[in-house]
Length: 138
Figure 1 (tube, helix red, strand yellow):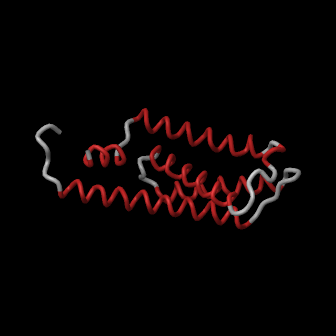
Figure 2 (cartoon, one colour):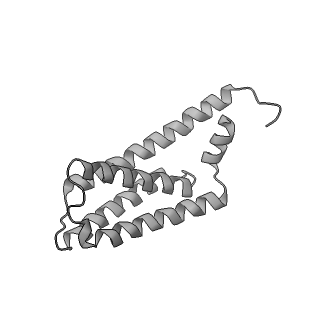
Figure 3 (cartoon, rainbow, N blue to C red):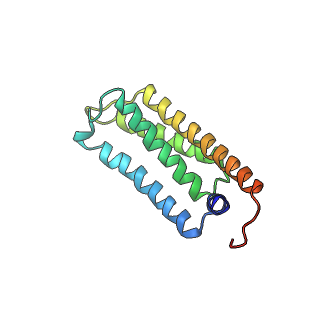
């Protein structure tokens, strides 16, 4: 099981990579579409808004890591950070919305944490898989 999981994370099938890329694009588009609706203003109060930012940008990071096979973690980090900057700039132009450095900081933090967590988890899982003797049925 561990070997298969490591294999999936290190070299996801093309269909999974495409699905992750599409999900990333849909979530980014949704961020701007839903964010432009009047209902988005004040939807979540502190500190829940920061938790929502962390969850959303963490998920974006994981999806993009899978879509790229984790081969360009710095590029993934920078791309997700760029989405965060674009989101805050977009919000600054909307009535009833405003950009905050705190939101951007959480977006950047989430991207960084998820890059590190996923990479360390893959490394740890790989090490555990290497320590296990191969099974006859795999």
